[in-house]
Image 1 (cartoon, protein in one colour):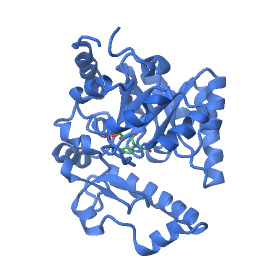
Image 2 (cartoon, rainbow, N blue to C red):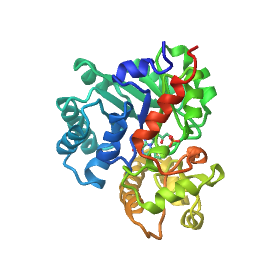
Image 3 (cartoon, rainbow, N blue to C red):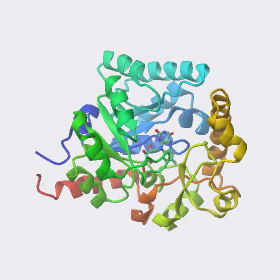
Image 4 (cartoon, rainbow, N blue to C red):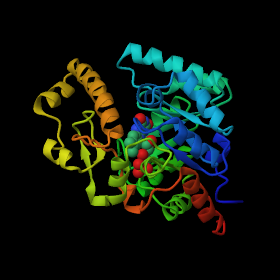
Length: 330
Ligand SMILES: Cc1cc2nc3c(=O)[nH]c(=O)nc-3n(C[C@H](O)[C@H](O)[C@H](O)COP(=O)(O)O)c2cc1C
């Protein structure tokens, strides 16, 4: 049996167990389609598709479908602090199912309602987790697999490293996907050897011609080393991995005292989260697309260390596939 034949490959219907993770604001239709077309699976980030890249949701999915006949997935962020946002997400999941999407990745919150709908349509749901308590909640809600987000990830990183996460989650009987720190083919193969059913990558896929992020952002990923990645609370109120640009250095990494106080309060924390969500949606959109912005909020993970050149998304997937096939199974 090939190293590439894993529960993730079977659940998602793909040849290479590589996921291009949802990225606000970097998931554009061309990138999602290119990863799927090469045999991995690209994940649609609905707010990125609509607000950043300007596609009406269903039309955006149809555009991706015109670019590739292969499976694509969708990310459902299911944090329930805003009723309007929740209703919008329910509608997006329904449209995605109508348009033939059968692989979903849920983040935050309880994925039960997504699992129920997706299972009824014969699809699969993998749930993003950073710790065992969230994994247990996801399993109880019906998740078919877990995306284990480790401390090297771009976006909201977890507290544990990849080895510890396998130890902490390995007995749950669900396929585990390694998210964080995978920048080259050796790291992909090492993750499969560690017992992971596949990998989810974000940062590596930003440094591709298909990604619509600015050339300056891509170059910063190529130039950055592991020590240039820092965790900032100033964007969303919880730590986000970013490149330590002069702007980030000027801003500092901690949330201000008022924001911290409001995030602790029972009632004020919802306002604060909403404020952060709106502010970060706007700021991240602007700084990912602008070539000469003075405010560079460039999200990236420690996988920058293994990323040396711009490379088409399809050739990354092919290179990873070939590295796994070159090894004897076992
Ligand atoms: C720019 C950027 C934006 C991201 N946005 C999201 C998001 O909107 N939703 C989500 O579930 N994960 C998000 N992530 C996490 C990725 O899906 C993935 O898990 C992570 O990038 C893996 O780590 P890596 O960057 O080291 O490959 C984001 C990551 C990056 C780098």
